Image 1 (cartoon, each protein chain N blue to C red):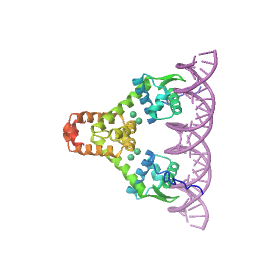
Image 2 (cartoon, rainbow over the protein chains, first blue to last red):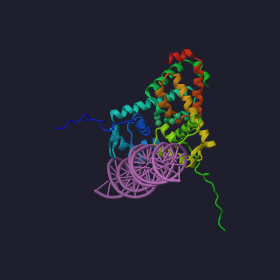
Image 3 (cartoon, each protein chain N blue to C red):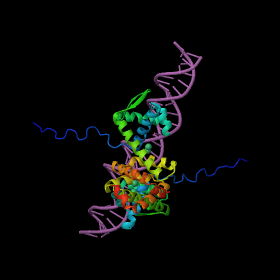
Image 4 (cartoon, rainbow over the protein chains, first blue to last red):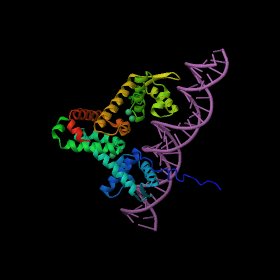
Amino acid sequence: MRALPVLVHVSAKTNASRSSAAVEDYLERILELINTKGYARVVDIATSLDISQASVTNMVQRLDGEGLLKYEKYRGLVLTTAGETLARNIARRHQLLTDFLKLLGVDERVIEHDVEGMEHHISPSTLRAIETLTAQLKRRPALLARLR
Amino acid sequence: MRALPVLVHVSAKTNASRSSAAVEDYLERILELINTKGYARVVDIATSLDISQASVTNMVQRLDGEGLLKYEKYRGLVLTTAGETLARNIARRHQLLTDFLKLLGVDERVIEHDVEGMEHHISPSTLRAIETLTAQLKRRPALLARLR
DNA sequence: TAACTAACTTAGTCATGCCTAAATTGGAAC
DNA sequence: GTTCCAATTTAGGCATGACTAAGTTAGTTA
Ligand SMILES: [Mn+2]
Ligand SMILES: [Mn+2]
Ligand SMILES: [Mn+2]
Ligand SMILES: [Mn+2]
């Protein structure tokens, strides 16, 4: 009689590891479209992200495969709970960074650009730190004035 | 007699456009190695960035092609003026972000990780804003204490 | 000086994401 | 019910940047 395997699951199913910046950008924009238009069609996502429709179709199918949204060919899509959680999370980072840089007086266009990249590299503890700082700064007009 | 071409140079030579995060990481590390060990060999860069030697050789040849460093096969490399400028620039962003997050009391390991990603998305004006903020915060111990 | 070997390069492959061009689909208009 | 066409999907490519495996090089050592 042979010994039973000790480890049955080494890793459940190539666990959703870490989301890439691209995945976060798609999810964030999809949630935003759903919140403002009520739905997110391939053409909307493509226009909004300035990416070809073909690329969007491709990514949407991939996100479906990863369980971040449910997609029906030629029809439409809805975020799953997992997808919406990720979307809200990246949206929060985007918003916080934007608020923070606005407080510092950085130009809107630059903020847009920089935040779009930085948001993908903010750990929870860094997020909290900047959140706290932002809150404190907001009640110190004197200091804020000196920052510009 | 045919008409002469009107546009000889549409774009000098696919100008060094914008450096990728990878290029910046390589240049930053190369400069750091040169400053601490006096030279940067392929094996050093590979170990330091935790990337295979083959990948480093590949990138080093590419950076040579882009005029960011001079490379002699099997021998060694030196940064060009353009390469060193870029290297110092990314190093500065890295340092500033690190200082800033340290001030906020973020854990060293987290800082390392986040800065390594964020540093590639900081425009000059955002850099200046955080620089100013950091300087002001440094002379406000009371406020800093409240941030932790 | 001949052998050894760490460092290096080359060759071939892969994943991620993006593109254009060429079908396909399905709802709206006639 | 057909036709039309915008939206969508598929097919085929390309750039970036990483990997492993298989050579090559050159400096050290015996
Ligand atoms: Mn983004
Ligand atoms: Mn965003
Ligand atoms: Mn980096
Ligand atoms: Mn760095």
